Image (cartoon, rainbow, N blue to C red; front, side, top):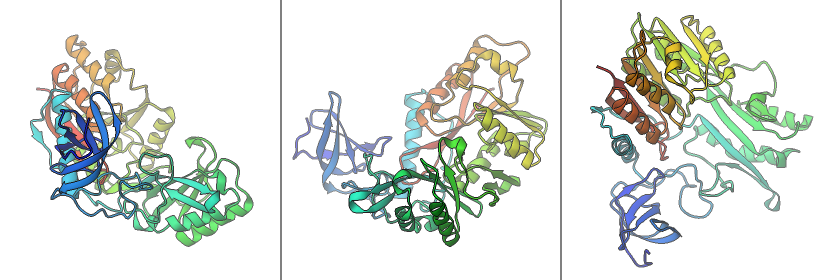
Length: 448
């Protein structure tokens, strides 16, 4: 058990941006707010047989990489915003730690070592968040409204006046949004505002549990006119989202390197960081190196974020996604951009087998961009084909795997390398979420 006066030396950071140390008994201690190289005393909150969880109480030796947080709502104190966990660490050091997390996961979970580590993809560290889900809470006893992220490890909404990771014009809207909601008849039945920014358009999706009164609808219109935003309403699930007033400009983001414009709805999945997404797509396609005579498959294609850029280079590209509705949206985006060589199919990608891979036809190269669960079924099916080859079908010679979870990437990399006959030729991190512990990454696999 860690003693109150015991000084712990922090050895590393874990995936939740907690310092990792060992106490005098050799037990692992996870420490909120501590950085590698620091010596700290802690207050232990949870004790288990193999580990303890604590918060930093005293700091004796400070890391040279510790910096002053850029946001006034960051910290370990009660009421602190839980939206970012790494603001106290130098931005460059954050990226280095994420790179180490990726390497450690590949090595320890997948037993894989990339032949070459890529230079990290980086961009702006503040004002980058073009997608966000803000909680709304009317507090009757204080006669106030809170709009923002949840408090650290709490269901309560943080009392935020600004947010440094949101674009400046959105951060400046937090207090006016609080005033707006407080003035509305339905102020206690509006639990959420979702933010989505496209090219020149800021969309706000108001989750309204009941139909709005005419007065409330007018209040939204007045706010939109002042702050130049587009209001959408969401009475139930994401499929019910609709513009407050039809006929507004279309929400879209651009991929200028490929001459593409990607329309989307504010509740669609798009990357949080548009700048990094643009760089990521460019790097992924350079790694894929699709040729004019090649056919490519894009697994987990979403709205076509990679599919349509591939279509500008390859003879043919097939995008596959798990939702019929999403596939329909992908087709619309292909038509909007005039990409007739991009086709799409809907399929449960977590239940693939070798025969499914054969049925989708031969492809020289694959791009794989799964959710956090990874692409286990896809990689296992490749391994099964390696063990029992299918006549007339050969695996792709190159796979570019874009991941939002280094643990599932490492698991799948182990299958690709040790079972399916690939080499991991390159890997690297993509700093999509600065100041958070989220690790986005990319790896490239090739067959001889």
